[in-house]
Amino acid sequence: MPWPRIIITEMSAPLLALLHLCDSLFPVGAFAHSDGLESAASAGLVRGAGDLQRWLDVCLEEAIGRCDGPAVVIAWSAFHEQEWDSLIALDEELTAMRPSSTTRMASRSMGLRLLNTWQTLHPHARLQHALALVSLRTLGPTLPVAFAGACACAGIEQRQAVEGFAYTRLAATISSAMRLIAIGQNEAHLLLSRVLARVPATVDAMMFRKAEPESFMPALDIAQMTHQYVHSRLFRS
Image (cartoon, rainbow, N blue to C red; front, side, top):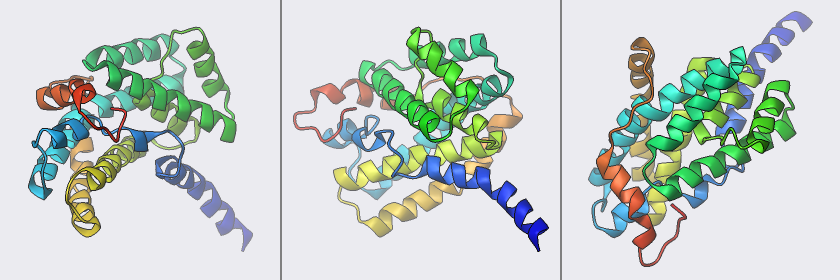
């Protein structure tokens, strides 16, 4: 019957868009960045599965739960309501919160590539306006802002956008880890599955307290700032 097929198609489109956006094949350049993990591994701070588990915990609870996750929520609303001044202020705040210059540049580089690519694939007036702000040098955009914008314009719900963003960042960390420390695929993906199981609760807590972006991750910040001094590097940050 045609009617159920129409319903399924309408419900599936945002999900398929989110899967496309979160796929490692999507060309944002995340494979070139370790977010400080390479520096930590080089210094012997992350050697094996136990250390990586603790690193992932901080990534989820602090980097995502208190900084980038709230930013995705706010940016999604700003795109949806076309509140451009709020979006610009958020983008500037996210950039200012990152003490490492290479991490600041990485976030903006990936964010702009994501926004440009998504606008090419799925043209939208709000994305076009955001790119106009980029050309005026009033918007970066940082990666959380760009990801939220693509989701909002694709009809992806706010909560799903946050969970999708969390997946992309945690999976990218696991991908980097498999190239940096002695850990096999099965063990690495076991760690990923464990931390992903905690994503819904982290998002629940974040949305319940209507969190604003905040940042207190001294170990990660130091690792990101010292990455430039690693003797032989695989990653740009």
